[in-house]
Image (cartoon, rainbow, N blue to C red; front, side, top):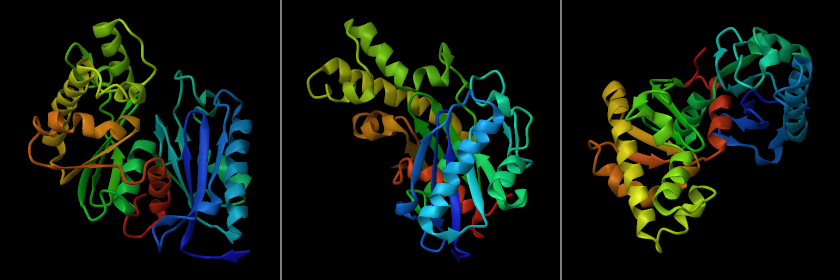
Length: 291
């Protein structure tokens, strides 16, 4: 098994899955043949969760036939990222890990020191990945918004990417996520037509046939612009990166979004689901290293 200093392990941990792969820091790319995705029971005992994560990580390493000494993990919060301690409680996922040191537990299973494991926020990792080798490459200051079942926000400035945590910002008659997520599209279409749709992809397929759908996408663009204007005032970014499933329908709300925003570059994620993996791996790249 060959040791390569430029190869690290990246992992994207979600509420129901873990995705892992080896990352080539020199070439800024995922080694595709090491890509592994497995389901994880987030309600399982701590030992079972850690074992599931460790086994998946080991599988990627075995596929790469490489000795890996550095591990980067994208992890949802709440979490004490610097010290590696989970703070997830009362949120229906990974409650058995509450107040446990995930770095230490993983290190023991992987036979490495906890200092060889870096963990950071998953929303921040998405944006890190886009800066590392995606749509935000070459920019020193960026903000990212993931548009899907929920609303994720992140900010990047001179090597540091972190969760902006704006999903619950007061917005209109509720919070931002209620207006900037898949459920808003589903609810809006039902309220205006009495018909049900499954998701934004289904709604987008009706765009050319139904003026109501056009008006819904236009209103979404206006809502997103209203939300982003505050984010832009806070961060003054050079570029905005849009990710998540709704971003795939960007052309349908692009004009209403841009018409209500100041002049700032807007780019759709170039990496998709790979962004968080690459962002996690880039925690070990000297140019982007943080914590």
